[in-house]
Image (tube, rainbow over all chains, first blue to last red; front, side):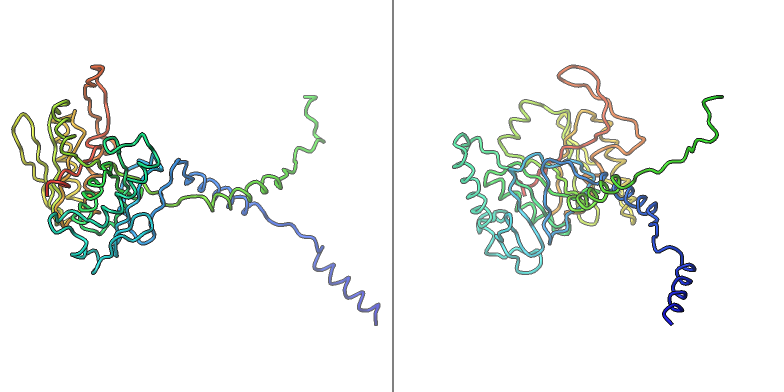
Length: 176
Length: 178
């Protein structure tokens, strides 16, 4: 009985061939080489990389200018509010509408809450760098604004930034 | 013909293992660090009143070019030169791409008139979306491929230089005034 089973097994192995097999790696190598070329082409060699905020759809542009400094204050103007770095400064009542309390009574372009926070940042920079004074302070601000926002809102942010000493204003865009 | 040995086997096996090792290591690394969407910047220095006055006194530009961006793609240029002001309306169309083509044609016409002006003051209306403003800025930034480059005189050296840039410097001039 046992001998019969053995004969059956050897016949099976004969028909099936050897248990060793060869992997066809040509297609895998092709795929990897293509992937490697694609990734190397998309690899960014910029010195400073701007991290776009999650909830903001930046406008598209053909601009190829990259950030040349990391000493930039990020102001994010989304559809729900205005943020300085990750801290919410002003919360919109309705979508993209500034609450009346956030606008200065005498100057309709001035946002006092944003000014106070940006002024604190400016004061911190001056305290850390004794050579920087009120006269030679040239703050840089990067505005990451949603593409659907009206210019009026962005203008108010630019105006307030300028009042706080951040006159070098840059707009963040997504490369086409 | 002695060098050709008909018995010699010309086929050989290429050892792909180290090559595959390298690729398999690089691909996950690149997948982790690659930026599929890069964030760029547009410089828009805010015109300070004093700075503007100093610039006007010191440089005396050939002309001032203003791009007005209105709601519903209403676009126009205003050029100020030698004390005179000229209005250039961009023809409207139902097709947004046609409006951008008209804007490009008008910008090209103005640039040919004032080749030494590179700054454009953008004056958008309050309710215009940022996307429309950036779109207009992009159109007037540089020449399209195939167009003849501009020649302008370098004030420092006196040499003639050629460039494909039209109005690359952007200033939002109505930030303060409005």
